[in-house]
Amino acid sequence: MAQPWKKKTCYWMKAMLLALWFSGIHVLADAAAAVSKEQNQLRFSKEGQFKILQVADMHFGDGKSTPCKNVLPNQMRGCSDLNTSAFIHRMIQAEKPHLIVFTGDNIYGKDAKDAVASLNAAFAPALSSNIPWAAVLGNHDQQSTLSREGVMKYIVGMKHSLSQLNPPGVNIIDGFGNYNLEVSGVEGSSLHNKSVLNLYFLDSGDYSTVPSISGYGWIKPSQQFWFQRTSKKLRRAYMSNPEGQKSAAPGLAYFHIPLPECASFDSSNFTGVKQEGISSASVNSGFFTTMVEAGDVKAAFTGHDHLNDFCGELLGIHLCYAGGFGYHAYGKAGWARRARVVLATLEEREKGGWGEVKSIKTWKRLDDKHLTVIDAQVLWSKTSAGSRRKKKIGGI
Image 1 (cartoon, rainbow, N blue to C red):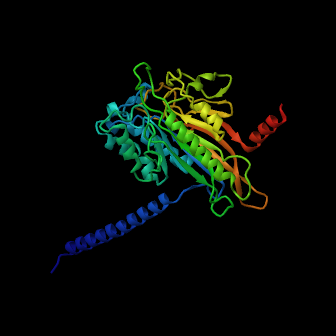
Image 2 (image 1 turned 60 degrees about the vertical axis):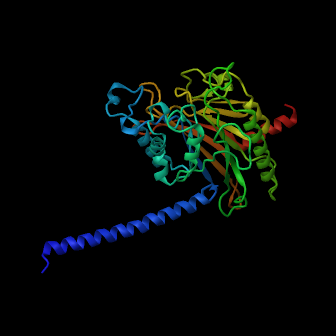
Image 3 (image 1 turned 180 degrees about the horizontal axis):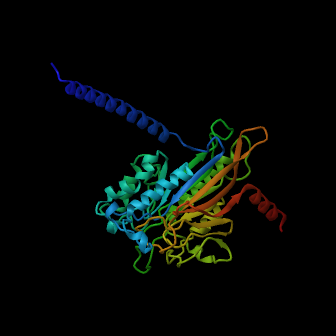
C-alpha cells in the first residue's frame, strides 16, 4: 500500500507537470502574439498618440561585475550595469512607449568579454517588455568579440527588434543600420494605410578611416543619397492621399554622433544643458543641409556626448541630445542619468476620427526617486509650421 506521503508527492508531481505543461502553452501563446505583433506595422494608438523612448549610451559591459562610473560615493557600492537595466524597466513602466530607440554605444566593447552575452543583457528589458524597438550603432559597439556588421546583424535578429542591417534593394551604402520605419495612422481612420510619421535611422560611423582626417566618423554621401531618395518617396506617397495633403508627413532622425551644427547653440537658444564640447566629426559632411533640403525632418536625436542633454532649433530642425543613460558610461557625479521621450499627437477632427500629426513634443526623465520630468517643450506643431509657410509666401 502506498504511504500517504508518497500519494501526496505523486499528486504534487502531477500538479507540477500539469502546471509546466500549461505554462508551456502560455509561453507558446505569448510567442505567437509577439510574432503577430512584430508582423504588424507601427501605428498610432486609438488615442491618437505615438510615443518613443530614446535610450542613449548604455555602455553595457558584463552586467553585475561591471562597476558604475562617475556616481556619488554613497551610490558606488553595488552599482553596476544592473542599475542601467533597472532604469530602463522604470522608464518603460512610467511611459509605456510604443517604440524604444537605442542610439548607439549600446555595449562598451572594451569591457564586454562576450558581445552576444552583453547585447542580450543590454536589450533584455526591451525584449521582456514585448514593445517594438530599434537600434543604431555608436563608436564602441564593435570593440568586443563581434565586428560592426556582426553586431548589427545580431541586433536585427533579436526578439521584437525592428532594426535592419541596411535598406533592402540598396547594394552600395556605407555603414550598418541605415533604415526607415513608417508609423501609420489610427486603425480605421482615413489615414490608417498611410505613414503619418516617418522615422529615419542612420549609422554615423565610429572613427575616421581617412588618414588625413582625425576624430570620429560621419554620415557619408551614399547614406545621404539613400535618405534623400527615401524621403522623396515617402513625401510623394503621403501627398497622393485622396484627401489631398499639401505637405509631407513629419519625420524624425536617429543616429549616434552629433552633427557639427550642434555647436551653433548656446544657453540663449536651447533647452537643457551643455556641459561638454560637441564631439562631432572634424569634417562637415553636409547631412544637416540635406535634411533641410528634404523638408520633412523636424528633429534629429543623438547621444555620444553624455553630459549634454539640450535641444536647439536651427532652420526649422531641432537637434537634440538625450543625455547619458548608462551607469557604466562616463557621467557627472550628482547629475542624474536621464532618458528622452518624444510624443507625436494627431489632430482630432470635428466629425470624429484622427487626421495628420498635430504636434511633436519632448521631455526628459531623471533616474531619481520620482523619475522627475524636466525640460518639456514643443518640437513642432502643424499650426506654427503653417504660419511659417504663410509668412514665407507673403514675403515677410
